[in-house]
Length: 368
Image (tube, rainbow, N blue to C red; front, top):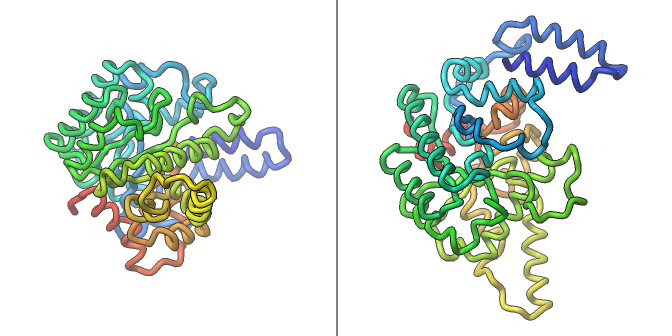
C-alpha cells in the first residue's frame, strides 16, 4: 500500500512536467522492489516507538460530514489513506515491520470526534476507545493508545478520560485543538483538566484547520495543513499559557507534534515581546512565568512529518533531548523519510535511544 501511494503521488504531481518521464521510471523501479525498502536499506536493530499514528473506525468515518479541511471528493490518493486509517491489525503491522517500528501510539484521526453532535461524539469515542483497547490487548508489544474524547460536553469527556485511564489502561488523551471554535482555556473545559491531572495523563494536543472565525484571506489553498495547522495549534498553546491553565494545574502535561508547531523557533521572541508588551502598557501580566518556562516544563514535542535534521537539532537544543520524541504521523505521512533522517542524524547512542523510544516509554507510561 505504501509503495502504491508513493507511486501515485509521483505520477499525479509530476505528470505534465519535463521531469515526468524520469520520475515514472523511478516509480516503476520502486514498485518492483520487495517490501524491504530501497536498495541497501535495512531496519536498524534498536527499538522505535512512533507517537502520533492515526486510525479510525468505520462508524466514525461514516459520521464525517464533508471531507475535512482541504475539501474535494474521494480521490484515489485519499482512498488509499482511508484504507490505511481503518487497519489496526495485519496490514499496519506489516508496514511497521517493514520499517523497523517496534510500537505505535495510536490516536484518533484529527477532529473526527469533535465535529459531530455531542451525544454522537460521546458514543463514538466510547466505541473507539473500546476497540483500540482490544487491539492493544491483541498486540500488547506493538500498540499503545491515546483515548479519543468528545470535548463538546466536558463533563462526559472527563468521565470517558476516567474510564479510559482506569479501566482500559490507555496511555493518555488526544484532542484536536478547537472544538466548535472554543479553545480549552475556556473555564467550561475545567473537568477535562481535572481528569487529566487526577490520572497524570498526558494530553496530545493535535492541530486542525484554523478557527472558523479566521478571515478567508488567511486561508490559502495549498497551505491549509503545512502552515495553517501549525498556526492553529500554536495559538491554542499560547491561549493555555495566557489563560493560566498551567498555573492552576502545575502538574499538567501536554504533547504537541510537528516539531513543536513552530513554537521552539519563536520562543525567545515570545519571551522578549511578552515582557516588552506588558512593561510598555503597564498592565498586569496574566502569567506567572515566561512562555519558554511553560513550554519547557509542561510540554513534550514530537517530530511527526518534520523529517529535517536542522529543525530537529534546534528543537533538541531548545527543549532538551528528554522532551523530544519520534513520530511518523502515519498514514498522512510515510515511514521511510522519517526513519531515514533519524538513522542518519548525528545523535549519540544515548540520545538516539531517548528520542526513538525511552522518552515515549516515560511520557506515555509504556512498559517494555
